[in-house]
Image (cartoon, rainbow over all chains, first blue to last red):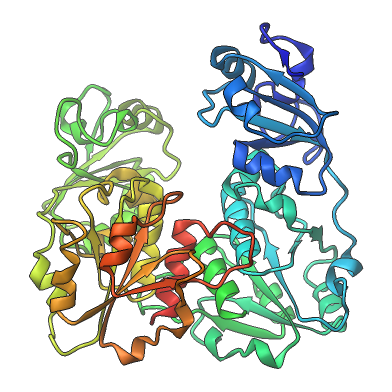
Length: 266
Length: 266
């Protein structure tokens, strides 16, 4: 039975307080706050994900639409109280919070459930824009990428804005941080991956000439919007490849480039 | 010689006043305000575009970096005055305004400079999100799409946020509104185009099986995030095609789908 919240200061909805302020509760380290999920479609994806649900909060009409387990804490409020708690007007009407989980075990992520099965990963370097990260995660899930590896400078993929832009799909995509960057890419080479560094450079090979069928396992590396992959990361990868582009155009956005690369290498 | 602005109310920088308020000056019809371009890279693209430059406004350090024609009105201000005029803090430090031009002539856009040359267009239906529109325009230019056709419900591609997300590339992409939607698609068929409606529906053909080399001219149709293309638009197109996706995932974002489609059909 949902609990009705009438006081915006109610401690029971502390998970959802002042969400615009930043990516975590004040004074706590990065990547430590609960995972916040916005909108009924994304909350439904959370329910199918491994992240343990903490609480649901929304307007009654939207919360009713969710097929929630019996033991979950459910809070409802009118839209004014809801907006007052979260700090902005939420048109989607429902949120959920979930506990973080430790990142995936790197060896397990590289190996997969079946060591002989084809496997495709994406590796992101310096991706510090939460929206690009969320967009890449959504495309990754849609286009059959099975996991995400992040260099130590990447943004938090579980931050609210990443989760929102991914439409909740990032919650179903295992990810791990690759330490010892970029030398750690040899962990992928040892596990049989062809690593493909994406760059707009003229001397890179055409991505459409990298035949994924020749390689059981591929991992595509993408750098941040603007700088792109560092020379060190490009050197550490087995292949440097470019998406064929009209000359004179600097490059695709990183989220668009990721989608094209994922689709091309399938 | 740049004119220094010290009074935020100075009428000479009226083009740049209160940019956050909306997509046009108060009380004027949609799509009538000047084109506003943010950031030196995008301003440089404006200089190469057909849009007539009206004025440049920014902090001295950034404005100096631009290679501007002699006869253009150039205004500089410190960052506080600049922010006060435009209504937000601009980290990129330079803006420009330009006159709108009438949309491209539809027949000329369909025909191209050389009637025998291959030609690829994108057609957008109900794309009412300026950022998606900008992102699609950027990918279109990078991936060799030669023009954009918009149904009457699409957002204004020259609105500030579209221009910004496109990194100014939308200014180099001709566009026209296709009246009589979707029956007007027959104008494309008469001009020799294969029209390809993108949909995640199971009964659509695999996009990778649509061979663009069999067709000198192709036009790919995309609908808005969420609803996608209307059934009427799908019926009016020659082919319905889908991007192969992992089952159970609803779909790619429209900007990612556009990039994949443009890359696949080249």
